[in-house]
Image (cartoon, rainbow, N blue to C red):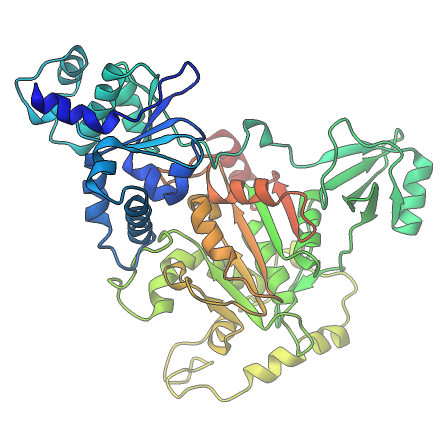
Length: 512
């Protein structure tokens, strides 16, 4: 009995109230947000000792975000639990809650029996697994103390196992966006034909009556009259809308002209080309033009000495933020190339080796004189001497260099590895982060805080396609970033829904 009394001591400071709950935290929650212990208001927090053991194994990962977060959690717990007494009895937090370390006595004594443990052993007999031991600790808390006990974990399988043994379990919800945030691609604003005519002539006008749901700053809308006439616009935040400012086309240096093919792409291009907008978030399924348009607009703004940006930086988190890529052979570009092949494909479309046969890329009324002036800076850079091992023609010492490969060699297009972005300051670059829905909110914050004054960052991805087991459509970094920055003057958001890659790709994206 003495062992059991000592084991229950860590729970002695737990608050008992009709309104208080006890949350048992899994390891992945602490790794996801090291500050989470301060975000449960005045409820009880319990951390199984098995979690400390898992954190101890992860803290040795020197170059990963998980390792850094594990070490950060250790520092926080060391400050909150500075001595043996606080470890055994728990502590009160500044927000009114409590924090305790849980040691389950039933796991230490094989002969100990309890209804909850018997139920666990009947369903999950292997208690050597850390997940099962954490569930057992949560059941011990549930059985020993009155407040409702909830296991908080980002592992869906652990949630299901906990519910199977009668333990309530849920995801960490602090950084989840509201379910209602899944808005449509754009809203239509009814206007009279006279208002629409005035808007076309003046480029802006004040809305007489806003929609039932208020518009947010930089929100893209479609003005529609009763006669069926339409005009795209962007809300200016002061009760007025303004016309989109789009060029006839965008063009990579030495490449072909590209135009928006639908209304949503016009919205996207307006945000990409607006110097007052420093961050753009874009949702879109496969084939909607996220990659091609963002790359085209980025290169369009880096083609001469008067450009705002010195170049384009591209990355994607297929190799998750902080993961080491040193085991892959070759240089950094060679290591990243398999994961960045979509951008090589986009560059091949924008700057083809041969003139395109598809009329969709043909520019109307683009004189040769205008094209020659547009490409002057690019051509001068490309005619500079190349290294001896590189050849721009088939008769040299190496294979023929594709036109877009010169952009990579000149540094105009740069490949960024997210594993090494911490500590950097990215100035005067147009930064494109693809597949941003695979990142956690903390990882997205790490990337965005690297962007210096004069740079622009574009986060693109499809919240419906997530491979990261610890984020979902409401908690991933792309959706979270849009939700928190929505309505700020330097932020804009676009949702692309219409596929433009091919009829087959559009059909597959919708039906398969």
